[in-house]
Length: 429
Image 1 (cartoon, rainbow, N blue to C red):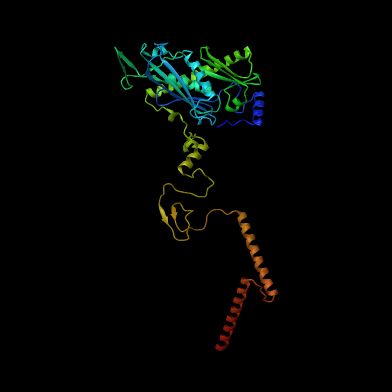
Image 2: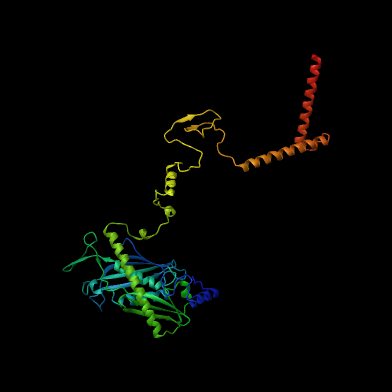
């Protein structure tokens, strides 16, 4: 899939931000993104996160025949794979030009700098040697993939352990980890790549560029260096010209960044070694921050019980209302008896706990509620008087209202009943 280009507005915005010495993610010009190094359960498995860029490296080894030019040296092989999972522009099964650039850069940085003692990988000179293979996989690409790959490669090599061997005559025995402890590789130093992005013909400089910044930059310079201030590789790409002072300034910045990253790798290796030695939990699953339901739970805090607030808090926790002096409800903690009361009798004001059908509320009624109730009663009375006056004034014409018709019928029935009662009295008399 073709890479999605940036719009002109985005390009101008990023360039203007760089000119104002600002970055779109809030960092300073020489700041790295958050760097995390974690190791898997197997030896030689390492995962590096630089911001949103994520790379995994796996080291393996096998016994092969040495090269004729170097019969007593082992072989270090580096392979970089860029899958479409990391970026849609990467094609599956075919390494792009950017992948070839990363692969060759890592070979120069690791192999030609002699950071691994290849002579210690020799089993029998001219016959059998160890071939150490480093597979680097890009899981997500959000800029500065070269630095992430170099950190993952050297960290996995330092974490790897090869099987121990025994040579007796022509017989070579490879011992599993259950019989003999694996042997670590001999790492002389840790070369790490630091990338610099240049804008406006080298006028502005950024460290650890993101994906959008890489699309806008004029060129890139990669410096491979160890903490001993030894430059292992240097590569400049892009259409720009740099001065000697700019290269020296970048090398001074790279020294600081390489020292910090090397200390982070050593710290991660030490933590993994301690967890493995004491039988604790280790691996990628333990390094992932899990989102739990109890994450937002508030932890309990100690309360000073000598203060008034502490006493109120303790009374609230114990379910006691002794601290509320304005309350009219009283309870007795000593008397736990239950009284069955008659219907219509409330037990709010009594000392014992009561169960009944309820009674008149002992709570105070506000004066405002009384006034509202009185006003409502007055309004209803006035309405009834008005309707009665209208009825007499109209001479019994009630209109179409069903309620008024019902009232008239009831009135006639009542008149008939009173008339019948008078007739009965006359007959009796």
